Image 1 (cartoon, rainbow, N blue to C red):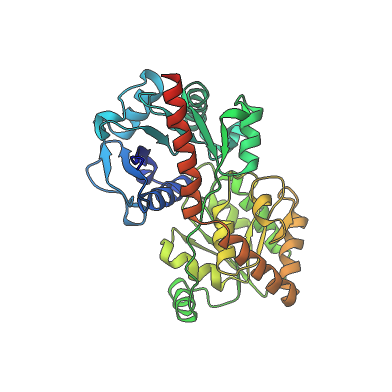
Image 2 (spheres, helix red, strand yellow):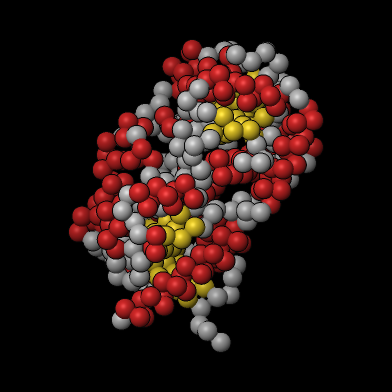
Length: 372
């Protein structure tokens, strides 16, 4: 019987102020991998005095390196130390689940979620762009294999210096627990969303395109509210955006994952007109609850929603408005989308993600042996 592969999984993003999609992905991958018998998963992070917020606590043991995050990231990217194994002990593979690149003390697999920072630097802080670009350089030089969650990201990586032979497509998964009528009613009361509503969720940042979503919403009849769910991110002043919007816009801020499902299920439409995405987990989460989706063409969400949602031009306010109106105005079409969305979400599980990752880990170990 083949011995299990030991993998160090970087999970520092769980302690970030806004863990975002990389936090969701890290936790989803860790949970699915830990449930298998052919891999030993050890989390690794910077030094912390307390665990992350409960919603972001990793499902595996996390070993801590001696440096706090700012010093660790700086040391990894500038001096290429300390080694991950200083916390974890010997491992077969290091999986960097974000662009923070540890030193190459064992074969490295890196997940590149997206290259949005190359698409439009103005959507990020200057410090963030420098960090991402350095991580990308190190991924190009040090990673054995590169995991991409979508064909869009994979093609972006090819355009930016990665050989096809190093790239592997590994879509993210989603864990769907259909919300009950009681849970939906409870969530409506708890968050004060009694009227019919359109929903958006994500980290509030420029590439999420909230300004155009608000402008599109103003064109709709006053039958629905617009509910924005998610934490404040960077380079986007939500208050100034809302000052220009209609009074029917509600902001809920961060919502625990247990409440997201009922809110998705309560929404008449989920509208996600992002300018650039590496995958688009909110789209799949909404589909899993049977909520019709309106989302962007020209980025990774097009892969998720083709045949299962309405695709719009995210740069065109009228297109976004027409997409929402089309769903709201046709109950039969909305139900058709709901069923297609459920089927699409059901095809994307974390177990499937873990199986594909295991293929990548085995290939990485074999490549390391041949090189040795």
